[in-house]
Amino acid sequence: MKALCWNGKKEVSVESVADPKILNPRDSIIKITSTAICGSDLHLYNGRVPTMKRGDILGHEFMGEVVETGKAVKNLKVGDRVVVPFPVACGNCYPCSQGKVSGCQNSNPGWMPLETLVGEPGAGMFGYSALYGSYAGGQAEYARVPYSDFGPTIVPSTLTDDQVLFLSDIFPTGYQAAEYCEIKRGDTIAVWGCGPVGQFAIRSAFMLGAERVIAVDRHPARMRLAEMAGAETVNYEDSDDLVELLKQLTGGIGPDHCIDAVGMEAHGTSVYGKLERGKQALKMQMDNATVLRQVFQSCAPGGTCSIAGVYVGFIDKFPFGSIFGKGLTVKTGQCNVHGLMKPLMERIANGDINPPEIISHRVALDDAPKMYELFEAEKDECTKVVLKP
Image 1 (cartoon, helix red, strand yellow):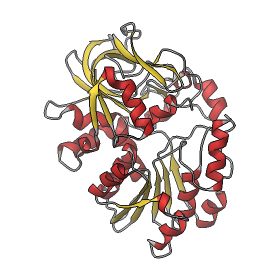
Image 2 (cartoon, helix red, strand yellow):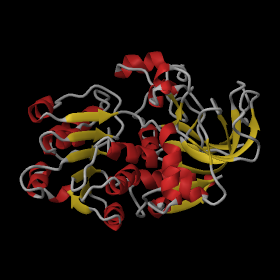
Image 3 (tube, one colour):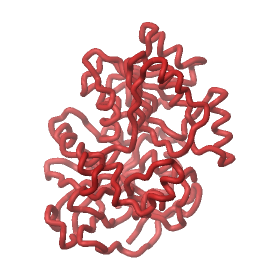
Image 4 (cartoon, rainbow, N blue to C red):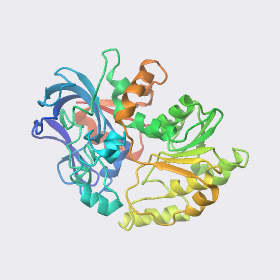
């Protein structure tokens, strides 16, 4: 089969690889009909995540048709259309039993180096290095899906691939970020990052009752998408002091709740931000905490800071005094996708949200290397790429 393989920093290629096989009775094999490039994939593309190996198959947002199942898989049959959640989770361990699938204790054979690196092991993840289990990803023609008796969700024929594909990751991730804020009617929410996750955080905040959403970014195409959803936009490059500007826009108080949908590769314009970008280049620090600092310093007293952006290491210059002094609540972590897929599918079916509106490019799998380059370089108004194997 064809698959997109990682060959080094900023080097990916479509190659012929072995077809996946059933390795465990709980496995299934999916013929992929749609897959997508995620902003998190750019961390791999840019060489930010260690333990990637030449030939690793990328991709954790995918869906398709079941073509084979293991003997223990009774909930799926050949021919079913399914969307696959990006965390690999067993469904049986304590975190899974509590709905916290991102902390699955059984799905990640790479848990020990991950715990050493970041201080805590986590669930396995498709297409995301040995740290997350070395599972082959979904930017391919076929994929093996472990724990298929727990993970994939069947898609009704009334919904298209474009409508439901993002249930694999970015829609639940953006929704969970907004849900963590415990939004009340009339609240003002600030969202850093108008990329795909930020777009769904904005739309979810309005669905959950926010009166006002202020979206922070610098890319015109992404900001226009945020405005389409009803958000006010702020270009951080136009402000000498973003924290002060956000306070001015909210009566001197700050947004009621703040969402970081950027993560480790923030484009810091402050002295600290530029210093961290230098440290990243020298492999001295993995994360740029520019957005985190702005979130904590901007948020209103008693507010919630919801962190959906990916961070993977230890961070210097962390403003814990702002968190403590204002009594902030901080909620974060990989999304617990499994429990959100069906209720959010209902939202889509009811017309509460239109996921395809964020798609800018639909191309064949063979065009994936060019799309990675385009997405990373932020060219051609590239907001979200869907690949059709």
